[in-house]
Image (cartoon, each protein chain N blue to C red):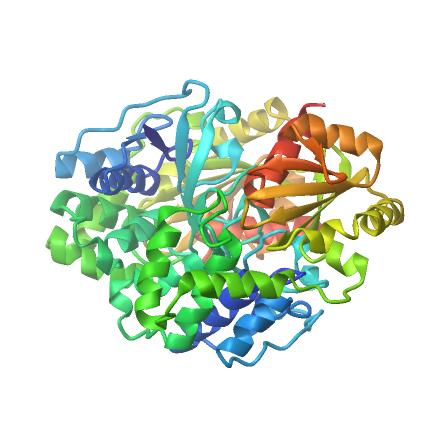
Length: 312
Length: 312
């Protein structure tokens, strides 16, 4: 059986794309099952409760030699702990890639707004697969993944294809008010309750290496930026702690105001604050580094860091 | 305009897949043109003459910043000389991969027998693209590429999909006797005339790195193994010369008898002959290292070298 796994710190797109791809392969007669590499976030839980879908099983390791399909990621550091023991047979993703294999495998990467968009194309785009049916629930999950990753088309990663796919998918899903649905999702994601600071920072957090140095980059997408800004002192302290503990050059944490399309960034020190200000043209606002229209880690934050830090 | 380029030492699959993909993109309203990174081999020339297709323009460099699509390869060393100055926007291939990008791009890799199979699927598999028409000539070129890379289904790289695609393609191409056509292709490839020894060795030749050492691996696919074996002394001398000149650990040259599905390998020295014998269980025959059923560089020769040399 093929094990379909999304990335660590699972988000709505990684979970929904993996789960619906399980259905796609099963319908094609291929034995496959989707797993999560950790607990679902509140947005994803909201989506699963709304459509009455059971959550995928959580795992952290798999037996040696297990066949795995990587969904919504392609780099080992973002994947299952013992990936080196496993047999990667397929990769489906929409991020930049760093892949090396010792044999030809299936790889499908497309620069769309979400991995759910790619899975949706598999159902909707292929005329010779009329035996593969997309259920109302699976169409709904795919819409949720696309809305989540594109911030309902606000992110600069959004393509026309993503919009077209949501329109087509909603002919099946029949979600009455997509705008309302997206707000419910974002509000669910924004409600952090009494979540510990480190968990907030690591909600959507990855370590990147530029020119030999490691940088921690975390993002919190929210409809209420004050959930983050009200705790900025605690967050800044924790960023400093993470920097030391993990041997990083710097840690950045951006609070992304989804609805107003802007971000408020906190950093692990003065030097990194200066660096961030220089690279992104940030201005000080509410005790943080404000940048208008900066909302996407993938398309804006990481590439600009890479571009600037690689040159030095 | 997007420049579609196959790999160096172009073969029938790399040229035909690039050329037909040009047609596919053009029909989709995307400006694109296919180029060759060197002269066509005799098999490819035979195919182009048979179907009255003009040869693609040859290039070795492109202006800085040009958008390129890599067809039938993904590693920089196998690509256009100044690839580091160019903007790779898409990769279509069926080989093992080693890819690193700084942004999300389109990547479609599928472990089929040829890159032409992947292009064929783009025409035949997509119901929503009924506006994209596959011409009789383009169907013929795709069949030629599949036959060439799979040795007309003899190679262990062949999949059921490759066979199904040729059947579907031939409904359009209407090639009367595919077996006869494949023999004509292989005979054209086998006719080396008075080609200099180094050119013969480099007909299908790549440098691979295993555990820090570089190895040259060349293959000559032929319907008449004596074209190679009759010149084995000259070839062996040249392999030794290439080894020294290019600073390689070893050079291997396999004469693959396509019709009888076996190979006769010459090497650049005794030590490498022993290594080859150990890895492949070769036996001495006609002054070369004979291995039955060893025909595929990609699926057999390179992976077994890698497996054995990486451990040491």
